[in-house]
Length: 489
Length: 111
Image (cartoon, rainbow over all chains, first blue to last red; front, side):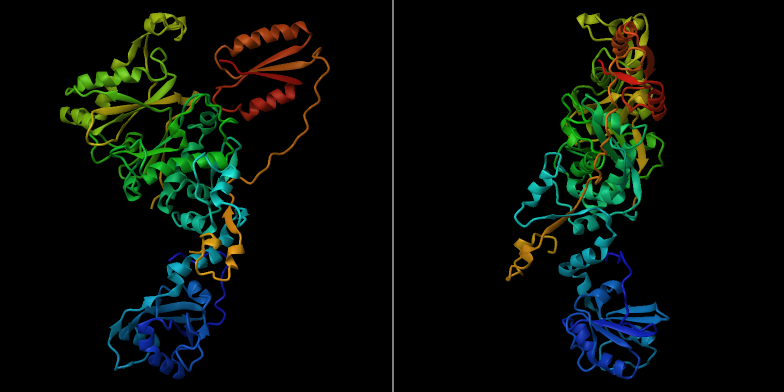
C-alpha cells in the first residue's frame, strides 16, 4: 500500500470523535455484518459508514458515497470491512474484517451479534485493487513530482517520441509516465526532491526524482533504484571524474560492480555470463547511470563524449561479484567497507580481454598467465598510467583457494611478475615507437600504480576463462576506482 | 491499466479516453543554455596580453613554446598557464586568473 503523499487530503465528512466503518457491497463479509452495522449506527456506536461501491449499502443508514475512493485512499484502507476509532481528529484504533472480540473492544460493547461466527476475514479494499490503485497513486502522488509534464499526442508513437526528444542511447527506452515514476520512487525512502549529486558535464544538481525518471527509461525495477542512486553518487565525485571519463577519446565508461546483500535481493547476475546480456538488473543499472549522464548532465556522444571507438559497455555495464564462491573477501571489503554492507564500486572500464588458461593447476603458473595478460593493458610498453580490473572465474579461483592463496598473496605475486625492465619499455624498444621516454631506461617500473589493480570474482562454474577489464588514465590524473555504500534497504 | 495508451483501452466504447494525451515526465535537466555575446576580437595582438593554456597533454608544450615565440615576435605579451591534469576541467581559480590577466587566450589540445 503506497503511503498517501502530496497535498493533505480532507477527511472532512468524517467525525473528529467516533467510529467509522468502511465497507463495500461486493464483499461477503461486509454483507454478513451489514445488519450489525445498521444496528450500531442506530444505537450511536458507529458514527459514519463509508461505502466504496454502493451508496445504498448498507440499506437504511445513508452511508457516505466513496466511489471515487478518496476517503479510502486517505485513510489507507487495505481491507473491508475496516472499523476505525477517532479521538479528537486522530485515529486511535483500527480493526479489519469481522472479529467479534476486536469489534467489541473497538465499539465498547459486549455480546455483539451472537448469531454470527466469531471471525471472518475481510476482502480487499477497492483502493488497493490493482485496477484502481494506480489511478489513485497518480492522482495523489503526481503532485509531488517536479518534472515537466510532456503530452504525447494520440497520433504519436510513444517510443518514437522518446527517441525524437533525444532521451535514448539508441535502444528503446520505457516511457516515464507519472505512474511508472511513482512506482520507481517507491524503491527508495529518499524524498523525490533531495539532491543526489551534481552531474557533469553541465554540472546539473540532480534530484532523486530525475534519477528515478532515468531508471524508468533504462528499464529498471523499483528495487534497483538504491543501487542506481549509489552508482550516480559514486560516478559524480571528483575522484571518479565522470566528466573526464565522458570526454575522453579513450574507450572507457563506468563499470558498476555490486557487492553485498542488495545484489542477491534485486536478482543481479554474478555467475554465468555475468559480463553479458540477459539479466535485467545487470543490463539496466549501469544503463540508468549512463542515461543520467546523458539526459541530466547533457553528456552526448559526438559532443562532450569524444570517444574514438568507445566500447559496447558504454550502453551500461553493471554486474555483481560472486561472493559465496569467492576464495577471497569481497571487493568492497578489500576496499575498506564492512562485510555485509551493500556497495557499488565504479571502475573506468574499457572492455573485456579474455585470459585463457586451461592447464594451470598451480597458483604460481596461473598468476603468470594473469600477469602476461595484464601486461597488455592499454599497451605492453605503457605502465602506471592505466588501471585494470581482473575478473577471476570460479575455476581459476579454485586453484588459489586450494593452494591457500589469499588476495594479498595473489596481489604480491602479480606485483612482482609485473615489475618490468625499463629498457623494454622505452620508445623504439622491440621495434615499436610507442613507449616511455629515455628516463625509463635502466630502471625497473611497475605495470600498475599502487591501488591500480582490482581483483573481483565472477562467472560461470564451467570454463577456465578469466578476464581483464582495462582501465583508463589512472588516479588523480584521471579516474580513481570509487566505492560507495548502497543505502539499502 | 491507467497508464496504457488511452486508445488501447477496451473499456472505452465511446472513444472519449482515446482523445486524451499520453503524459510522460521530462527526464532531462530542463535547462536551456544561456546565450552570451562574444567579446569583440582585437584588431591586432600588438601590446596585448595573450594567455597560453597548456592542458598537459603530451607535446602540447612543444606547440605552445613555438606559439609563444611567434606571438612575442608580433609584439604580444605572453603568459603561460597549465591545467593540473588534462582529464578534468580547469579549476575555477585558474580560469579566474586567466580571465583577469589576459585579453586573449589560446588553449592547446595535443597528443
